[in-house]
Length: 205
Image (cartoon, rainbow, N blue to C red; front, side, top):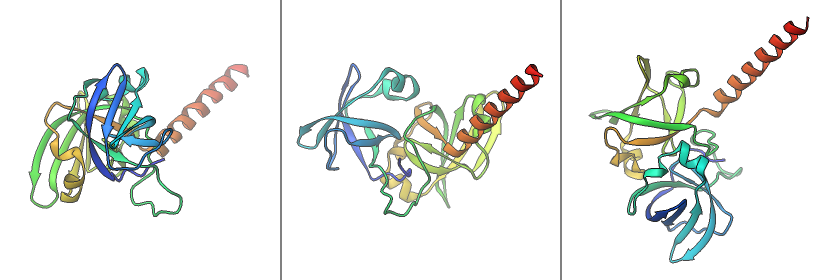
């Protein structure tokens, strides 16, 4: 479990055939979990000099932007939360749901930066104004929701977020990792299962 508060960033040393190498100052051991751009990965090998190796599965590649990783690219990192710490962000599982497409980036005199992203409409039930989701592992409040051919979300990024994360380097049309509110997903799944059970009960009667 994570909180969506990025601890640091790290450059990609290499990525090839599902093996991701990162260089970081975070002390890691074999088997440790780490949120990498919001995706929970397991350290498969510590190679020395701050370099750690991660295995990226086909499922992870299908749901994230990792298929496009390049050497030197900077990724957000967060260690798992501790039950002894304050929860400053929100509950984040590290299980990426999909990617979003950046549609607009504009400077904002009060917020720092205004970010707009586009998503498939199928996720409309998981987002709402002033709710939250995670972009690139960063816990963010949804400022507004609009729906046309696609689902459009707007966020305000404060200077501290831009300074501490890789969101400052976003460009229009790039893909970013998204994890929706886990509680919204649980409730939706519960509702669907209950509706399915009621339908079965009605058919039996």
